[in-house]
Length: 322
Image (cartoon, rainbow, N blue to C red; front, side):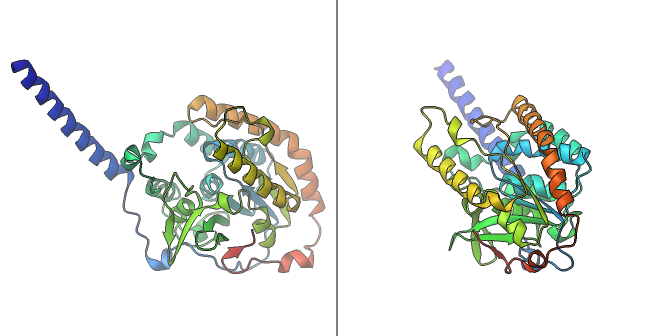
């Protein structure tokens, strides 16, 4: 009986410890994310001359570490975008880069990321994540600056739930815009911004090339980090296959509007460990170096006067075509 009593005591203490730890983790990873109405993400028609070079970073979850490899090569080559457009994880990487964090520092940050920092206890019981930790992380990294105060003009792309349209954010709280852009259905809850709900920009435009072009960009360098459909291994769930096919079709429909589309083959399965991060960044670096002649040629072609049709082809307020 004494042994049973000790066992029950240990169970009670363990349960109390787990409950306390859960509360601490939940408090740490689900901070207050309320944003005053004037600071909510929204779109304002850009003023001034159109951007010369737009960099478009696509969706892909942890595959988005590859974006850093692209940025490293562009930085080393002295190719600096006048506009960064991001969808999903591309919005996260793009926001940090647009804030002034260089590619080398982004790489250092990538190797130091601890996924537990983004963990939400509710997911242990089958719930979907809120994404509030991502919002807080981005806002901290950009020092609380709204999108319009970032060093490089930045646009986050998200999908509006009520009509499936792609919506652009270039003003307001940076973290909330990125959170909405990456709210992948089934993994994250939809994100409310004002009167509407939003999910992952991947749903409407995995690589929002047309959005960058309609914002007047003279040269569009786009990065697709999605898997190659031809490399799909046997036994993959059917919903993965359907999502990959949908994404590939959407990217292909927008690809002709890009001057250069970089699509590194980083393998089918995504990973989270440091070895994976090193590998995909290195592959993206190599592929981008190979693309440099095409990028420089596109920049050379664009060195003349801005064509009239591009200078006036601006985005309708708040909404991009799919």
